[in-house]
Image: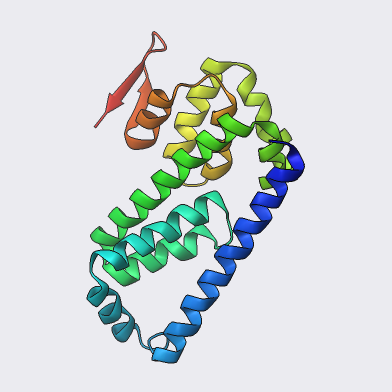
Length: 187
């Protein structure tokens, strides 16, 4: 796929997501549930699994197409579903989005990244990918720490030789490196 088509696809997806989110917000406003947290929680509870799936879809989208700040949608999950269930739904959506980012970067390469992130951010982190072992350690540490730009790092991981299996394990478990530079999974 050429870079112009990638850009068009990203722009189209962004427009569709913004329109859908605006439509949902207008609908909820008309129902009067945006001004009353208890009404909003009751409405989401009535939706059952559909409400949870919709929320997780929003989380997937905000990872792949960062329209909504991650902190806002993560806080919304805790407010809507409670701390444990909200954490679970947040985690599932964010993990799926991260897997999609990894796959998209692997499939479309640097042209996609330069459309999704600034050249400055790209240049700041691309140097870490030159040495796979160093990148694996850096990626593991950065994913564990709450201050790293996880979405960018997942995209960069897709440009490396990291296997999907290793990517999966790093995202889903605390992984540390022993003295022999072997990865150990800490559950």
